[in-house]
Amino acid sequence: MKCDRRVGRQVSARCGTPAAPGDIDSRRAVLKRGRLATAVAITAWTAWCVCFPVTSSAQTVAPDSLSVQQAVQMAVSGHPAVTRARQALAAADEHVSTGRAPYYPEVSLSGAYGRIDPVSTVQVGKASLQIYPEDNYDVHLGLRQILYDFGRTTVSVDLARSGRDAAAVSLEQVKWNLAYRTISVFDAILILRSNLSVLDEQIMALNRHRDVARRQVQAGTSTEFDVLTTEVRIAAAQSERIDVANALESQEIQFRELTGLGSQEPVLLKGEFSSAALRLDPDSLLKEASRQRPELAAARAAENSASIQSHLSSLGMRPSLTANLTSGFKNGYYPDLNLLKANLFAGVQANVPLFDGRRTRGQTREAQAALLAAKAHTQDLERQVATEVEQAIAGAEASQRKIQSAELQVVQAQQAVSMAQARYQAGVATNLDVLDAQTALTQASLNRLRSLYNYTVGLAALDRATGKRVW
Picture 1 (cartoon, one colour):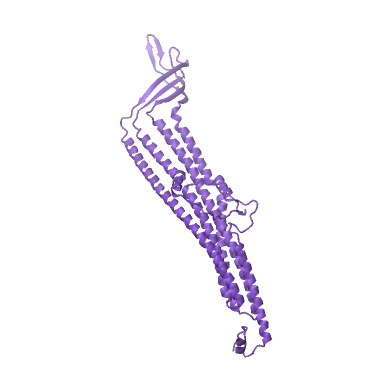
Picture 2: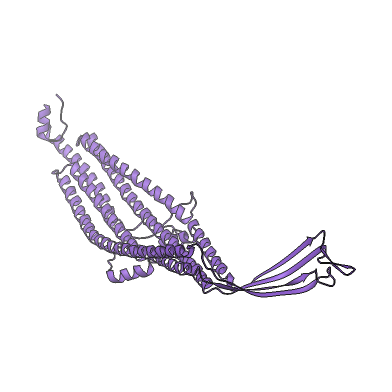
């Protein structure tokens, strides 16, 4: 028959070997010491949870650690996407200069040489007169200036300026997207590192608890069941830690890509998750979003460009007036055909389109349709932005309420751990009860961190929804 080694008179009687009073007292003392050691380990873990600072990083901040503002500045100043947008803006500036070209005259220098053989002659009496020289030279300086084109050049310049404004808005939009991507990754790294710290401390506390349980088994005051249940909790915590560490590595890779850090450079960050409550005014936030959102600015710039393009298309059949001036040297003048002589030509040319195959009408209708589409796109974006602002406000307010609930859960979990320790010391609670209370406190601490993180993310989402410039 298998013998149960639990302490107590009845258990010893079942094993067939009654225990002496001295042995029972000795075993009770061992059991009490084991429970005391377990209580000390749990108390140490609980004290850490209580004193654990609710900050964005559990590790000591290095002197050269990056703040979120510094990280954002690195992203918006050196990212290739920003460089590309800047070059597009520079190209748009040059396009405006190109559009102004018709305001200035076109000046050209031309030269020509031609050989004529045979040369025509005219018989005058007994003399034979040559009409053209065999060698013909012509060097001219030409000037051409548009005098009036009924506003086409002015509208073309306006269209180029509108494109330049759109390029500037696009640059701001690229920076805006990079800035908020960097903030999102920054906050994710901080919360994941905090989670790792909590899990590491939980694993350490569980390891200490397992060591105590093993000593109790060796002393005969406990069973292998307590050790096995503790090891199961350790394995679960280690598995969760692997998932968190993998997610952290992924976020650090993204952070390096955004900020331009080398693949071997450490990601050193500093920052805290604030729980300060804010009063949110939906009306003022909606006005800020309408004024600041880069997507709306880009849509309005596109709408302005479409309007100018529609006006420009309607000018396709307008006449134009051009002045031409040419001055130079050429030969072929009587009486000496081979002598180069100065010459001048000045004139004015009018061009009046009569029929262009209905091209202007088609282009005008196409531009008007594009304008209507741009206006509809702007209205659609305005609705989307308003929805995003309202959702961000609701999310931030919900996160505020969750923080209060999470704080209460931590306090309740701490009380449950204290009660489980007292009951375990009194012998009316099992090892599993203590482990459950300990796990509940860990989860409450993690939930508190997540609530603070979600609140921070919610505020960032609200800043993003209102188009706040964070660099």
